Length: 204
Image (cartoon, rainbow, N blue to C red; front, side, top):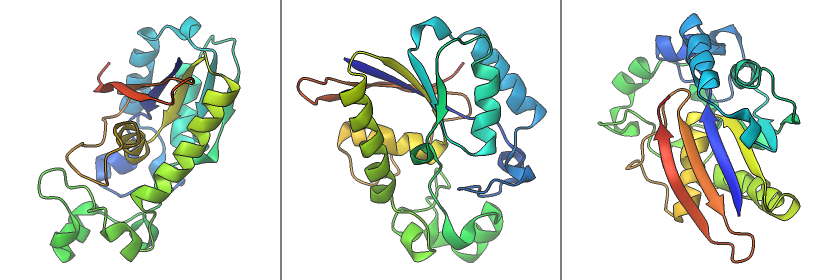
């Protein structure tokens, strides 16, 4: 069995300001002091010896989180662009509150997430596109490391799409994005290809 744990990065300045980050990689998309403390708290509760390898999104906020989480870890730590957050096109860097006032139909009234159908309209990345790149990465892990326990440090909408992929679910908002530093565990059976979502968005 291939066990894959997903951890979302810590709180960023953009999270606090209500700014849509997507693949934004400027100073506003870096960790706050609270975000660093969240990562340190998760580090204290994380058994790094359980992991055979760690793979990180190349965006700064995930690399910052990884630097704290993997302190003292002796195994390989690499980056992979397929773990990046979904692209939000022309809405990248915009405030959610401003967009919500202008385009109320584009947002779910409960989660305040952008409706999946709107992402391509604004030049963003569809759920299907995110799942395709994640599926490619997961297939490689299962083939190359079928019995490994892998830690992936990624982003909210990306991890949500990984969970939907495990459930073979469509692009839906019933599953909210996981919170900062939460842990999601997925399992894939290399022999059968069966996929499992063991836990989702578990807090520190």
